[in-house]
Image (cartoon, rainbow, N blue to C red; front, side, top):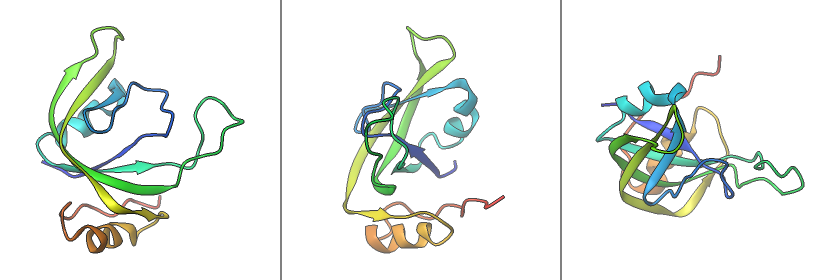
Amino acid sequence: MAKAILTTKIDPTYDDLPEQRYHFPRTYLRQVEAARGDWIVYYEPRRPGSDLMKTGGRQAYFATARIADIIPDPSKPDHYYALIEDFLPFDHAVQGHGPLLPRRIRERSGERCGTFPTPSMT
């Protein structure tokens, strides 16, 4: 199993419902499969959705959950759903990005999400 960070927007272009499901293309299937049964952290990016007039998201980590299963999307070829359980929003979103965030998330969440690798800056 592996930890993962899943990105979802306020107004997602995918069929995301963070408390229940995460919709993603085949491109990410291997990474999501590696995290099946393990804890993930949700991240809300700053970039807006398809409507460029909207403001972006908080650029913050906002919840943790576990990936229970992965199923194919019956209506969209080459897309999948990660079925989510044990969704737990953070009391306060963890702002920012960079190599110190995994430690800040653990400090804020009381170790609920365990440890996960620091993103590569390459």
